[in-house]
Image (cartoon, rainbow, N blue to C red; front, side):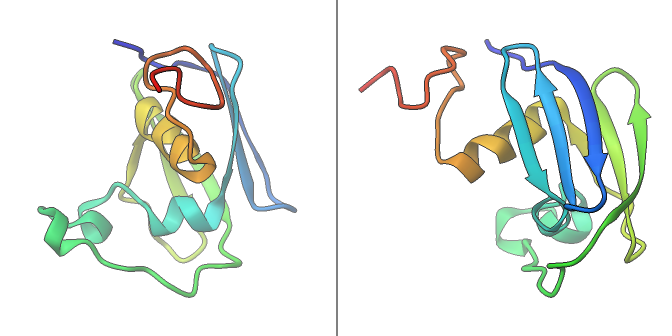
Length: 116
């Protein structure tokens, strides 16, 4: 099983982009608005897929703080006060994949599926 691991995490406030470099060479550019609207928190995701809340109006949101959580995640604090989501490395990689419509879960790092 492929487990992406970050080698660098930095936030560029002027662009509202979180950059996560993974050990496979991928540099994920994740907009703060995407991270906020897809927060892994129960507040957004609910306790069942049918309970997911559609969050809107976050186009200019910014990340005000990043806090490491053990060796597996980061807590992002947003300027609207939201701070309850724990973004695991795998979840950040998954958001990158969804954003880029690629499937690299096999670890091949191919922009197109290697399994077609």
